[in-house]
Image (cartoon, rainbow, N blue to C red; front, side, top):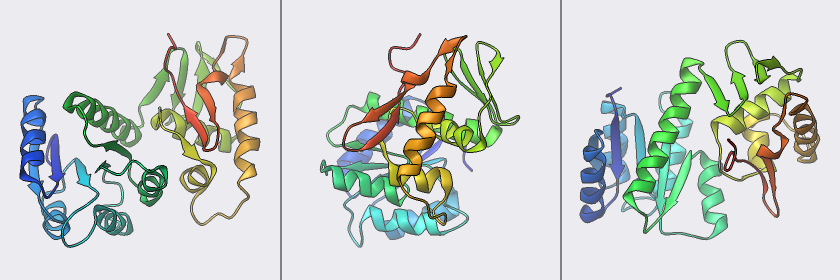
Length: 234
């Protein structure tokens, strides 16, 4: 894998050039592709660290390429941020359902995109290296599968741990119950969506520790599902 390499997949030269200039200024190495065939070849040959994938492309949509990447064992874990002019919630949810790690809607500020890229790469590195994930006094250790508040261990079940681990490594994004079932329980496990609510209640209760209450980090998003947000937490 190239160090810090980002593959930009967009059929508009002006957008690729703008992104390339912004990313290279931040120290990233950039690769470019203008359609899904060229992009797939470059991914297999170069194995970039992350892909910026436009939704609308000649010869097939970005969503089609994303599905192909997620079916392949060699590329299924490749981080992908969708670039889209589509703002309808159904379209955005569709991209996340297929396996996109994040999305950003055009037009966007390059600084926002770079911040998203850095955040995603940190999450991926943490998951691979087994590093601790920390929000204020709440710490999750993937190696020991233990959670601490202010250095005091919490007693929680494996499902609550997996749920919290997913939330802490995918913050500031609303997920439906169906998406949480797929990401935490697994796509081949058939349980009712209300199961998510039960485990959310259990997790919130565990996070209400005498040493600190972090239950409010798990927010209910009306009409959608749940989100883990540390905004405002010191």
